Amino acid sequence: MREGSLEAPTRNALLWKNDQFYDEEACIDELERIFDICHGCRRCVSLCNSFPTLFDLIDEGESGELDSVDVTDYWKVVDQCYLCDVCYLAKCPYVPPHPWNLDFPHTMLRAKAIQFKKGTRNKTRDTILSNTSANGKFASIPVVTETINFATDNKILRSAGEKIAGVHKSAWLPKFTKKTFEKNFEISDDYAVQDGKLTKGKVAVYATCYINWNEPGIGHDLLEILKINKIPYKVVEKQACCGMPKLELGDLDSVEQLKNRNIPKMVNLAKNGYVIVSPIPSCTLMFKQELPLLFPDDQDVQIVGKAMMDPFEYFRARMKDNLFKLDFRSGPGNVSYHVSCHLRVQNVGQKTREVLEKLPDSAINTVERCSGHAGTWGIKKEFHEMSLKIGRPVFRQMRTHKNADNGAPDIIASDCQLAAQHIKQGIGSEADDRVKHPLTILAEAYKNDQQGSKP
Ligand code: SF4
Ligand code: SF4
Image (tube, rainbow, N blue to C red; front, side, top):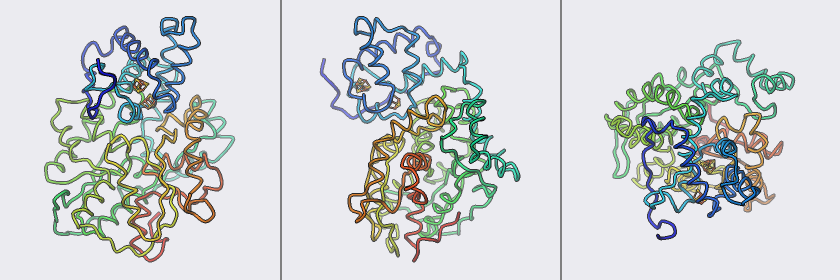
């Protein structure tokens, strides 16, 4: 058998509705099969803590092979995986079409799903943290917003929160807003639709929970860019969470319920010729890749998946169609730009970097490595220190900028705003006020000064 696949990776559907899927013994067999292969390979040792945990367990065992590892310790490897997908799409030579058919992240997901059904110690905390829609709705109620935002910064309450709720007292947490995106966005003007060779001329925006309840300014900047380019848009109405936080827990029944709420609204837009963009890479990935693999027979899911694009993937293609305005009036200066894992695994190349490089007075320092934030994983008490450790090389590379006179960037940016905030925490006070989303950078470049974006 040939060593490693030379073909582009493909991916098999995750048949989680089959009886076998929740069969723990069958899952353990598959874990053993892939753990053995990984131990012989070790290519992924630096990606996250799953692989070092696995290799240490095996190497420190009596025989130095998997047979001397206690099966109950397999779950330690599973717990360290936050389903970034990088080992599958960026590293592993044994994924399909290779006959070994290795899918490390989806095997971790299967194990998490079995664990979730059985009920874990932290199930209540994990379920609450992953209810992003419900949390956002509650936190945007006047008075509640102020109370939660106050608690976020209060050391005594955060210590209590760590003890009671298991959220690490030092982890960055987002602030909530009463001026939610869905209630305050500007309706699109009635521009004529201009399709290009590569791009459709009208856009639907899946805003995401984070933009709606935490940082609506990024969503307003996205709409501003569309408006400047005379691209008519719609915002997906009454959207529910994309389901990624539930997927990360292995709560696949909840993923299906959310899918059933979102897809009927989104499929009509896709069928009516809209390209659908979302400003958070994890949410884009969910619709583009994860849901199509979880629901391979659902035609509407497949249609929505094909209509999804990362915003910068769309803008770059629009530039190639000569349908994107390039008359920028100001530039961002030195930007340290981080490519998040969930953007990386969309396999679209570095489109954000390519667009930012078109701005005047811009020098982009690109860092393509996991920041360690990983959704809700990095704020949990038991994983936060590890998430900072994983992110340390990124913090180092983002803190410096080889083209800046003083060696420091003017702006710290990531397509994943949660990763950007985690990076800011990892860098420390010298990163204060320097985090800016790439959509904000682009919207501001159309203006004469850098102060024009909405909060
Ligand atoms: S999916 Fe990401 S976190 Fe999980 S094992 Fe692979 S690289 Fe590590
Ligand atoms: S996932 Fe693939 S590349 Fe990574 S250690 Fe295992 S076999 Fe090697």
